[in-house]
Image (cartoon, rainbow, N blue to C red; front, side, top):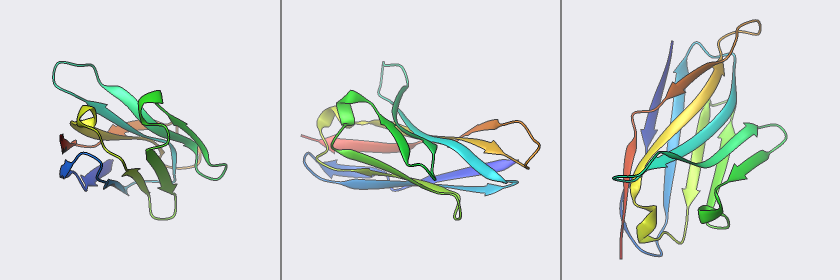
Length: 123
């Protein structure tokens, strides 16, 4: 089993910055695919940013956050961070961490979700 603990959410004024951290612990051989999603009230959960391969630095961002958000992963620490800058009111949502974990070299991938952390941007 793997546990994910998210931190760093809160209230910030528009134009400000926040850094979210997701720390994974438990039976982990390697993290493959690390992503941050968000869900605003009345809206579907959307993928904000993701890393498919930490070693290659292959990342993907939703158009709405390109140039403002930066995702980074650390396989040694089993963490994935989301640095959010130039925040806007429309970034307000619950942010969820999602990782795909390989418990050992021969295991299939397992997907885990964090509990969510609230980000509120006041205009």
